[in-house]
Length: 418
Ligand SMILES: [Zn+2]
Image (cartoon, rainbow, N blue to C red):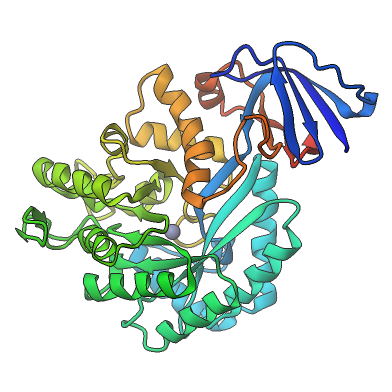
C-alpha cells in the first residue's frame, strides 16, 4: 500500500505529534517518534513548522447561485431584493452555466483548503431540477477532489410555490443528499416542517433548514407551546424542534441562520436555546451573509442579526459556521476562504480568548464534519488522511494574519503544496 510521511508541523491540541504516516487513504500512525516505515524520498513532506488541521469544511453555501453578482445587481443589499431579482433571472440559468460557476467556486474552496462542502441547491418551479442535475454531475466529477453534499433547497417555499413538493421528491430520488427547508419564508411553520421531515423519513436523508433569518418580525408576540413553555410566535425554529420531536426523527438536523434567536428577548432566547439543545438540533451560523443583508433599514444602532453562537455552544449545542452566499446578489462579497469566514464570525460573535480562537477551527473542521455526517474524519489513526496546512504559529495568528493555506492533502495524497 502506498505510504506517505509528513513531518515538521504543529497540531495545537496534540503538540506531541511530530510525525504522521499514511497508508493508502488513511492515517496509519501519529506520534512523537519517526515510524519504522521505509518511505521513498518523493513521499516524505517537511511542512516547515506550519499549523496542521484536519481538512477544512464549508458546511453551508450555495454553489448553484455563486458568481452571479456581476449579472444580478442588488441595489438595496437586502435578501428581499436578491430573491426577487434571482427569481426573475432564473429562466436564463442553464444547467451548463450553473455547473461551470459551481465548478469555479468548488476549485476556489479546494485552494482554500476544503475537503468537503454542503451546498444548498434551489429547487422550485422556475429553475426546476437544472441546479440539482448540474450539481449531481459535479459531485461525481469532483468525488476524488472534494466531497460535495447536495441539499434540495426550496428557495421559494414549498406550499408557497405549487409544484415544489413534487420537485423536491424528484431531487431526492435523483440523489440529493439532504432535505432542505425554508422556514424563513413559510406561511405555516408547522406545515412546512412536517413536509420537510416527511421527505427526510421517506428518502432516509438528513435535514438542514434555512430558518429565522428575518430579524424584522415582531418577536414580542408569544404563546404557550406544546411543551408548556412560552415562545415567540413568529419564530420557525419552535415548529422545527417540535415536529422533529413529535415524529421521533432520528436523522441529523441542522438549523441554518437562526438570526431571530438574537432578536428575541433574553428570557425567550434562553427558552429557545434549551429547546434546541433538547431537540438535538445543530446550528449553522452564517455571519458574513447576515451582517451583509440584515439591519439595512436601521438608521442607528444597526443590528447585525447573527445568531447567539456563544450562548448556544455554552448550552451544549453543536455550532458551525459558513459563508452562505459567495459572490452572488445575496452577498457579492461572500468568500470561499474559510479563514476569512472564521475572522468575520469571531468579530460578529465576540470571540475573545485563545480557547475561542481554537474553537473556531474546531467549528469548521470536527463540528462541521459531524453536522455533515462525514465518517472517518479527523486527526486520528485509522481515519481518512486529510490535512490542511496553514502558514501560522497558532490559531490567533492564523485569524489575525488571515494566514495563507499552504497545502492540502486528501486521502493520503497531496492536492497542492506551495
Ligand atoms: Zn443559505
